Image (cartoon, rainbow, N blue to C red; front, side):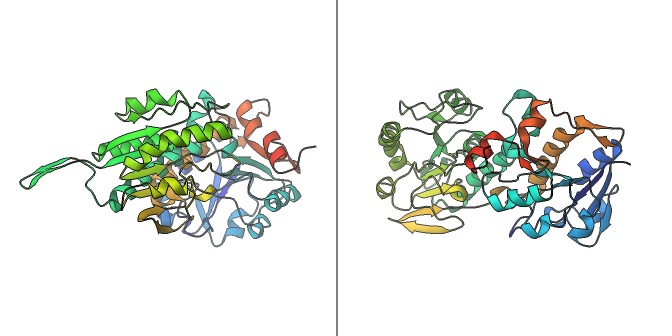
Amino acid sequence: MPLKIAAARETECAEKRVALTPEIAKKFKALGAEMRMEQSAGAESHFIDTDYADVQFVDGLSTAYATADLILRVTPPSLAEIESIPDGSILIGLMRPYESRERIAAFNRKKLTVFALELLPRISRAQSMDALSSQGACAGYQCGLIAAARCTKFFPMLTTAAGTIRPARVLVIGAGVAGLQAIATCKRLGAMVEAYDVRAAAREQIESLGAKFVDTGVSADGTGGYARELTADEKAQQAEKLAKAVAAADVVITTAAIPGKKAPIIITKEMVARMKYGAIIVDMAAESGGNCALTQAGEHIIANDVNIHGPVNLPSRMPTHASELFSRNIYNFLSPFIKDGKLELDWNDDVVAQTALCRAGQVTHPTVQQIMGEAP
């Protein structure tokens, strides 16, 4: 029997992405898979049903999932949706592995094999599968646009008959994929950009984009390509140096996050109080607590005459390209293991083994076990 792949409309509020695009459906078909989707599942990403020449469309999520071997998701399914997933099937997507013990317990009751793309190892071979990076690029781009749209100044320098307008000053904190995209976007729009990251290696990347590196004397290079959490003394030194750069900026974009943990507070209330009248903070880490002490997820607030934006689910604001990138990430993960229309996972492969969240009724990822209190 050929591999049966299913995808349905995402049900989270304001989620417009879809896990299976027409391009990737065609590629899965070429590998011998059969696909079923819920009607209009891609509509909010601007993919209509007739774009999917290789997919059977059905009415309703449960019908789409019935008899599926493999289910593609962008966001985690709700508890009710998990009940519609066939026992023992495979689920892949951004599963937020550290968020809900109840959801993990539901996965295990159904004996699902669950791949959480957040757990993908940070190795060269896995770059084409890295959904955090692809969606982070979308988020960083959106942060730059939000900042430019709400700034009371031109981003570029303008020479006009009425005189010269100096460019806006932008400070980007965090130079991962999202931060670098924010830097590049703001530079393209003409702003004068400074940037900071606790990882020493980020300096070269920041400067390669034409931004100035803010050197605080603190380095927090961690394992697996992520930054480690700073000590109290390091945080104090970082804050002292950063405060001056924050106070001089018209716009501050923050992108610092630690997987499985609350986002570090980088901009304190005192730093906000020193900012320019009418300055803007766009806090990309709002969903995990925020890098600014005053950020409220999903809200725009004003404190000390500073506008603080806490946008959530930024990739969903550009669902067409975000979906295309995400669907390619999934295909690049799965396609090496689909042979003659059948999925044959190699559990000796580091990418497969380390990305697995659950298997055969148990949590298999050691870090998730530890954080969620599921360690044996």
